[in-house]
Length: 96
Image (cartoon, rainbow, N blue to C red; front, side, top):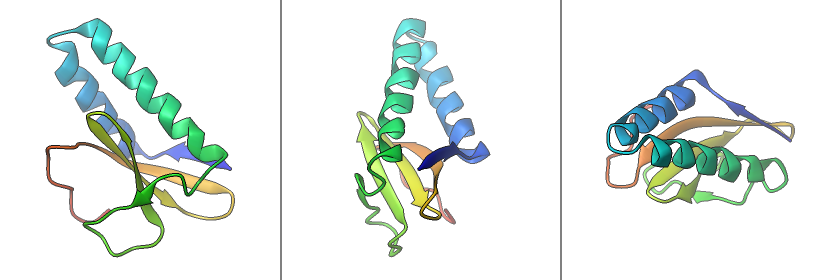
């Protein structure tokens, strides 16, 4: 299974990194590494995450890497797309 990061997912991750780096560049780097490591687990276990409660869609799922939600879509038997990285305290974006 291929875990593909969409441009929107990478943009969210970069924004989170930039925000955290204002206070701690080292923690920001660690956060990005943890999120990438967590999302890599999906290659072996695509249904590891739970359904996203804000959406009624079987293919849209989420993993948590505190304090962020990694939102991904199961595109096919061969591909998962990471579509968003959202702080758990924020509202989910529309139209994922």
